[in-house]
Image 1 (cartoon, protein in one colour):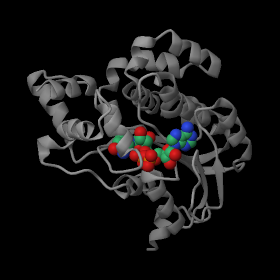
Image 2 (cartoon, protein in one colour):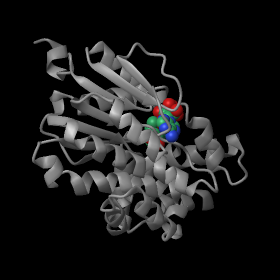
Image 3 (cartoon, protein in one colour):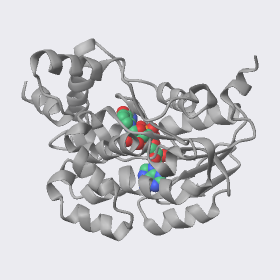
Length: 295
Ligand SMILES: NC(=O)c1ccc[n+]([C@@H]2O[C@H](COP(=O)([O-])OP(=O)(O)OC[C@H]3O[C@@H](n4cnc5c(N)ncnc54)[C@H](O)[C@@H]3O)[C@@H](O)[C@H]2O)c1
């Protein structure tokens, strides 16, 4: 058995965002090794030998629409991986980058995704507890126009004040809500997301700074360690520990897998779920992080 045939990427058109750094860069390296025609997008330059690279700001409607005109007519696999941390005042920007722009690009490209194609996102353990905002997220998901979505956000300041978490929760709601909807299932397009735990990437410093109430990187790192690593004497992941599984999920190896939110966190969120089921302990990431900070 040829391992590359098993993946099924040889000569296939694969589009991947966020490929200049971190998890998506690792995924991109593996996709190239597996013989894919890689079309990579980022706001920063991409230094890998891809078929084409595109310098775009995926928070901007115009850039997303322009990108859609430049991508190939047929796409076998789409990976949307770009993302940013949240800083005060950037609530709406985070929604555009981490969720709405991703939904918008997905739906612009949908006609071009081939039968039995795959779409895979990078969400986060930060979206844990997505069920609690599901109805609001679905309301937003059903808004087709960019401008109407921006109005919806303006009318829901409370939800987007939890900026990074809410954007990731929307992404997870999207996978759950859309996996069996006509426009995806009629063409048997698979829709999944990975939910990484703490991983050392280009975002690490921003996550640390934004987690500290005073913007102190070391203090933020300690808070993050307390939430994600302390309970299991754990360690952060390497980018390829997320990027490689991502490539597997989008490949023919996972040809019957759709609608899944795959936590890659060494079991941390399963332990949170277990505790909440047994003891009625906090269920959302916001409550868990608040508790951790309080202790
Ligand atoms: N690092 C972690 O601990 C962690 C944990 C959970 C989830 N995530 C998620 O993983 C994904 C990948 O991030 P990473 O950790 O590899 O970080 P990273 O910073 O190394 O990679 C993110 C990439 O997204 C690009 N990007 C950011 N804004 C963009 C925009 N407006 N338009 C186009 N590209 C843009 C960046 O330039 C960068 O190359 C993100 O969605 C992030 O939210 C990260």
